[in-house]
Amino acid sequence: MKKPVSTTKGVPASQELPKARTYISGLDEVLRGGLPEGRTTLVSGGPGCGKSVLGLEFIYQGALNGEPGIFITFEESAAAVRNNARTLGWDLEKLEKEGRLFLMEGRVNSRVILSGDFNLKGLLAIIEGQARTMGARRVVLDSLDVILRLYNDLARESEELNTIYEWLYDKGLTSLITVKTFGDSGLSSRYSFLEFMSDCVILLDQRMLDQVATRRLRVLKYRGSGFGRNEYPCAITGDGFHLIPLSSMTLNSDSLGRKFSTGQPDFDEILGGGFSQGSSIILSGSTGTGKTTMACSTMLAACQRGERVLYINFEESERAMLENMLSPGIDLRPMVKAGLFRIIPGIPEAMGAEEHLLRFMSIIDEFKPDHLVVDAISSTRRMGSIQAAYEYLVRLGGSCKEKRITCFYINQTEGSHDLYDISGMGVSSFTDAIILLRFFDTGDQVRRQILVLKSRGTKHSSHYYEMMITDQGFELKPFRNVLGTLRSQQFEDRGEA
Amino acid sequence: MSQPVEKTGKGSGDGKDKFYRLRLFLADSEPNSLLARQNLDLFCETYLKDCYVLEVVDVFQDFRSALENGVLVTPALVVIEPQVERMIFGNLSDTRKILEALGIEGARV
Image 1 (cartoon, each protein chain N blue to C red):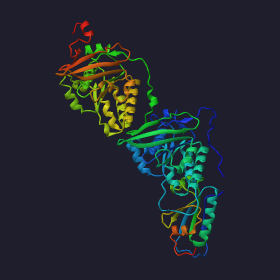
Image 2 (image 1 turned 180 degrees about the vertical axis):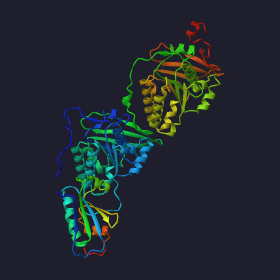
Image 3 (image 1 turned 30 degrees about the vertical axis):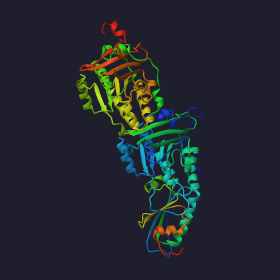
Image 4 (image 1 turned 60 degrees about the horizontal axis):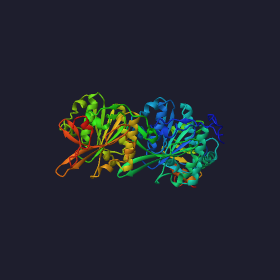
């Protein structure tokens, strides 16, 4: 009864599985190239997980890249799908008119009457005919469980699914089927057999972490191919689905870039010659110890050399920050005007860590800074959980390292035992330099201290210095302890003590 | 294999005075389709004698027609006239459901 297989492509039996690129940022990396070509992929997840967006982007991007596709929506109206696409900047109508994309509404009218057994051959005939007409190789059925509910009989549902799967396979279509689940993860038992039938299974999940919604994607299986096995944070932003694979930020241990000056000779000196371009630096200390002043002073010097600085500020508004910096004589306003210094205010709670990350990454791509300051990384934990914040920082740091952007992470510590609280979100392991700022109570006054705790690949000083914020930035002096003993020889040698 | 055919039932029937225009969507010769065809022929002879037109469409021969009518499911009976905007899915084994869809009441079953 089955029609002879007419268009099945000769799938090579070699280990090289042909793949259909999704063109979805990050996803092809995790899938090692894309979805299995000519096979069926199952995407499952609860309501609002982004299944439809993922499927639609697969069709949309395919159409843009010379692979026409068919999208059948069983739940939403075609008009709603077009509208949703428009909010992501995708013009489906244009592609539809050009015959590169076919959007079909497969909603079952509520006025339908059932009389006896039936099957979904009509759907298959439409897909076949339409695919032949437009030369489509990609098809998305979103979400198939809606139409299957017509049966109200699990045995018939699985029988029909089997037919559909076999048929799609025979036709050699690269298909993506979405199915709703209502469990915590994985498919509800109702459709668990689908996991066995599909060549590739992708699970989407949206969960709340400390009142912030976070999305996750996991590839459960991929027949005949390797794949990234982690759970990947993902986000739906202004232009589509994004995945942030950790693999894309391989902690490359490339040698550090050239040294650049902080603009403060004493600071350069104790650092062993300044900071390295493209390195990650933590400035750690409790509130008021001068972290922002030190970062801004160093960044002002960078701008004066014509370098570009992006300052992500979770702590205060752009205006407040620029005004506050005038008191220690750091006038960043001309640099802002010249377009060398850009401040991006951020409210950690405003969105999830992934959205923050993608937003900043796109700004970084567009602004192409030489240096990046995150003030303060301790606020990032308000984006959700500590884990989400940590992942955010690791990914941001990794991306900057690849692009040879210097990262200054300002970390606000709490309590007085700063020294062991500096590791800030556990990021210290991938930082190249750690600067510690703290207050020192001499009994009659409180003074600021600075210590270069770590500076990879340099002969930095291991002494405490006194930091004094002046009206022209800051000054460093060898620190005299309570007994008045001079702790450092270096400055004496230079005759500055 | 069924082909798109047009058939007009004639004879002196006890059906209503209305005229019925029906379109039956089938998928080649799969069992439910064959059954639906049989069931519908019998139904029409019994209830709609002389006052119906039946058009049979094989979705694999004419997918565009299926598309235009939004027919994803086969067999599917679309009632074009009178305009009840009704569609019946299935092999039409339940006569009462067809009567209901066509708005024929009090007919003997």
